[in-house]
Length: 254
Ligand code: ADP
Image 1 (tube, protein in one colour):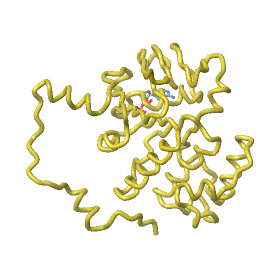
Image 2 (image 1 turned 60 degrees about the vertical axis):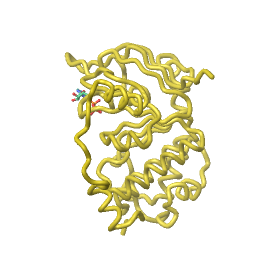
Image 3 (image 1 turned 45 degrees about the vertical axis):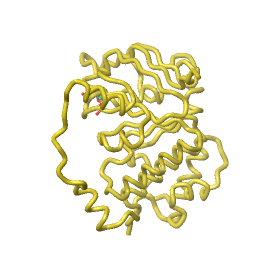
Image 4 (image 1 turned 90 degrees about the vertical axis):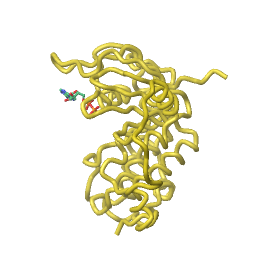
């Protein structure tokens, strides 16, 4: 069966003055998948994401989201996407309930805050202010706010950076849950274990160019086929396994 392309990016270029940050990249995202955009700092991931999210002007190229051309119908694109703000984008002194209502207002939707807080396991923090949350809770809450307009596509820009191993794993399960409810997810990350665990397909971007795009499995098989051999693992566990084993999987958020 032909997979439905929900995002199509073609020959996308972004210049900041004389500097070309995105150098003619093309890729597609299929409906229902988790697609990862991977690359070192400064590679052009956020720029690319923000252009698709209608938050940044492109220099040239075409972007089609859910059948709508970014140049012609950006408002139609805004209606079907959920975008995660950086945590500085929240009013620190409002409670989570107030913030959910505020976002509902932005999207012109009457919302039931518990519906979203339950989804990310934050009902007991409904009255807490945003600034009082732990790092993992802030990330979970910001993901909840992406769901308020019932988006078809959710964009997550480094959602687990700076979190402890328990909070990262907890967030992975949340991301899988959102996908299982029918959303397509586009995620950027520096963590290869995260990409391997979550993503059906990944695009690797370096210095503004896509240098590989495939399933994680295919990329690994291709590397092995070149004769590459990993240094033999001498132990059946690593330090992260030790840490999780000693401190447990449950969240500790004080
Ligand atoms: P990534 O998300 O992969 O870390 P970015 O898309 O943030 O990369 O940045 C790509 C490149 O563009 C970097 O070299 C960055 O310094 C540059 N850049 C990003 N935003 C701007 C801007 N507003 N003005 C000038 N240069 C920028």
